[in-house]
Each structure stands twice: as C-alpha cells, then as structure tokens.
Image (tube, rainbow, N blue to C red):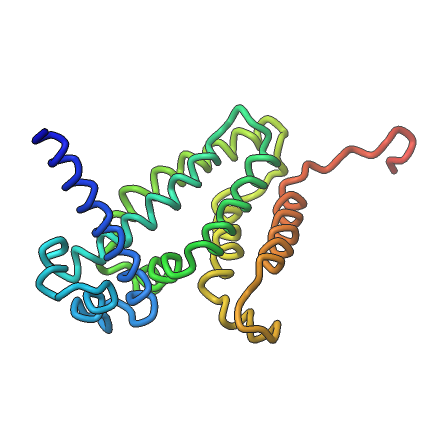
Length: 219
C-alpha cells in the first residue's frame, strides 16, 4: 500500500511539472528569459508563486527544464539520420517530415530554443556543445560514408544539415511573418504539407547522384 501511494504521488508530481513547463514554454517564447517572471508562469498555471517554486526553485531551473525537453525531442528525431543501413533519400525525407511536424506541433518550444541560440546560448551553450555536437558529427560521418559509396552527391554534409534546420525551423520561428504574407491568422496543415513537398524536393535534388549519359549521348 505505501508503494501505491508513493507511485501515485510521483505521477501527480510529473503531471503538475508537465503543466508548469507547458505554461512556461509559452511565456518564455513570448517574453524571453529576461522578460519572464516566475510569478507570471505560476499565475498562468493556476498556482501560487511559492507552490511553483517548490518544484522549480529558480527561473533558471525552470528554463533549463524547458530547454531540456525541447532538446530531448529534437535529438530523438535526429537519431534517425545516423541509420547508415537505410537509403539516404528515405532517411532525409523522414527527417524533414519530423522537423516540420515538430515546428507545427511545438512552435513555442522551437522559438524558446531559437531565442536562446540567437542570443549566443548564454545559459544553455554547454548542453548544446555536449549533446548536439557529438550527434551532429555522427550524422555527418554517415553522410560522408554515403557520399564515398556513391549514394549521395558530393556536397558539404554540415551545411546540408544547417540548411534543413533553417528551412524547417523557420515554419515555427517565423510563422507569424509567413501567415501575414499568406493573409491568414496562422499557418494551416496544408501550408506545412506544401512546405514539406518543396523542402523534400530541394533536399533530394541536392543529394541526387548525377547519372552518366546513355551510350551514344555523350560528347
């Protein structure tokens, strides 16, 4: 019986912490780190400031949790890139789809991460260096192996990743501008579907291996 009570208490704590971080990510995205207060997050979550601080004693600890969750999700999607046993076209297609899905479903989270990076990652640079860089290097090694095997056109794999990040994350970070251009309040699922087709087509065209001319056609 005591074990049941402990498990229930842990479940309740996890649920409450998830609710707090869900509110925090929106406030951090709208106000930035400096402009966010614990009191505002607590009010939005329906808690007292003291109650929230029981779970997150400082604003930085709450900010850290928010960014940890963003990075956990992002890195989980990146793991598929290192699947050397699969075809690069399918791996990259799946990755673009996953990144756009994240931008569509978690726009606030994407913006918080982008704001931290744009400001020079003063509070989260160490985690990015320790967690993102090794995985990126692993992915690049796979890309370079595909290139050496003739499965991908010779290109700079690092900048290919940078380009994919820029194209997919812009649909979260700059969605307000895109919606204004499209003359609507927010981007629709069709907008994301259309973006996916364009981005996938561009990426696959970039990695396509040129085919030798047919016999008799070369000059």
